[in-house]
Structure formats: structure tokens, C-alpha cells
Length: 96
Image (tube, rainbow, N blue to C red; front, side, top):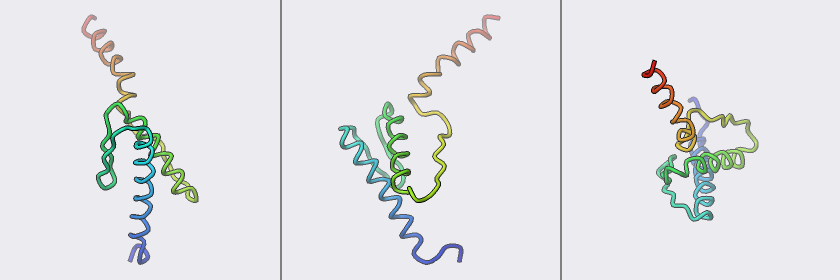
């Protein structure tokens, strides 16, 4: 057996506490949020807020553990900030 008995229940409880924190933050901010298992559906413009809430929840719920919450990839807001760069580079290449 890889895991000790009952570990699944413990992990589901941790997941539920993280989801509860995220849902509470969105509800307090009057932003719609839908929780589907371990995922969240939010307005696309709120993906940065979701990442922040999830990081806060992980830090709070797993405060006794060292957890790497380094972001991988760009969120919608971050992509919007740099998406014009691709267009500029493409235009520059075409013009040469």
C-alpha cells in the first residue's frame, strides 16, 4: 500500500477547505464562482483574483507544509498585457 489508510479522506478534506476559502472570497466580493470538483469557473477577467485566492487558501490550509505555489503559464489578464507584443513582432517580421 502506497498511502496509509484514511489518507484519501484527509486529502479530500484539504481540497474542500481550499474550495471553501475560494468560494467565500468570491462571494464576499460579489463575483460569481462555480466549483466543480477541484476546479473553478469564474468570469475570465477574474482569473488573476482566482489565482490569488487559491494561493491564499493553500497558504492558509497547508500552513504546516512547504508548498510550491509558483505560477506556471499566463492567466487571461497577464496574456492581455503581453498579447500585443506578438502582434508587433509579427508585423515587424512581415515588414522586413
